Image (cartoon, rainbow, N blue to C red; front, side):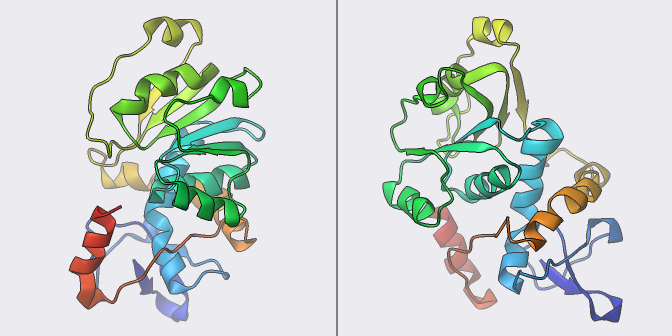
Length: 239
């Protein structure tokens, strides 16, 4: 979503039901557009970036040097998580069922270590048998057990989606107990407006400077004119 505020300064921010020509938001939810971004990049940033900030920083407590595993790294949230985690100093492993998309990320020098299309993860091996500190699960129940298996001591697992449609999975209680794991969900569906906007000041302070410095750059796959909204929706649905 984009808009203009008094004085001609550009601003943007996250909105529910944001597919519209005009919308209202509170001043607290607005953000100045970082200088390097064009309108399309600015429009692509607030929603996924706010969700990823919630996963990695607010709940994930990410630290520089930690290992992050992103299942479905080539999805929109996955690519944003990859870019933000790297900018925050993490080491990233990504998995995807699309080798072509993985190759695009490697060409753009976004993948820092591995890109694994095989759903049987090799995280302990990749991390010198330590495991990963944070898991971002965008896929769903089909990979949940492997996500648990991949985690390090005091690891954190964020569930942000289930594109596989599998809403149930077994939990390794022993691993949860012995490794002191933290499992949490990331969704704004039941949150109030105040809760949704609560992390925006921290997001502005910690993430916008990284965008301004060019260390986080929103990736645009394709743009559509507003009149082709149905075609745009079909492209999203087609993954």
